[in-house]
Image (tube, rainbow, N blue to C red; front, side):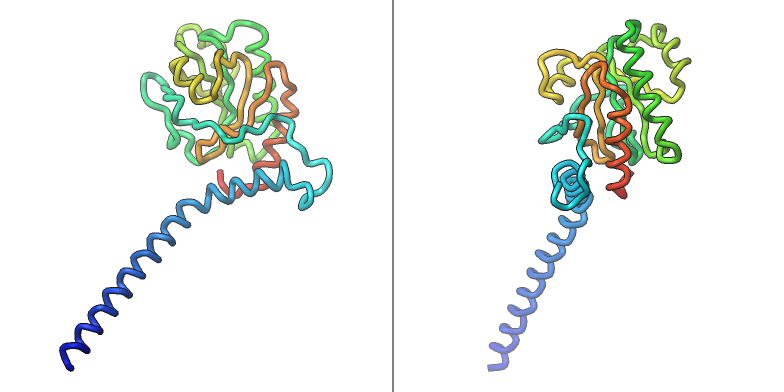
Length: 211
């Protein structure tokens, strides 16, 4: 009889231990997923949840569903990898161009995104600007960087960028928004007004406590 009680107690304790492990795993999963869930809800309520937010709150860029992966572009800065950690928890404005950004359209894209960035005021510290070229040439981009000292110039392979964005051609002079979790979630057409980018960024920064 005593042995049966001991065995039952041991089985019960083992069962409780297993339940605690499962519970702990679920709690850990929730902690990891909560930022992504919060970001997703913010996007939905601001860009699709018209029954929950005031009229007129519509996105100016094209929302990417599902979002593209920032890290899958295998970006480099000065021959060193530039991954998600390099964002340092900030939002990013991505501008794509050629190795010199010498044409007027490319310079216009940089100008529009710079003005939008500056117009964020104190929230500008939550956002960084990145220029991505297939084969960056340090000698050719010195002039651009002198005009845009806050700009981070990155290189990548054409194949990795096209695969990440689901495109067949390099997105020259287009610009995108990437969130602090590495989701490229909104795109703008070449020549699009920087004010559109600014309005969307303000909404996203207001809706999110990340970045």
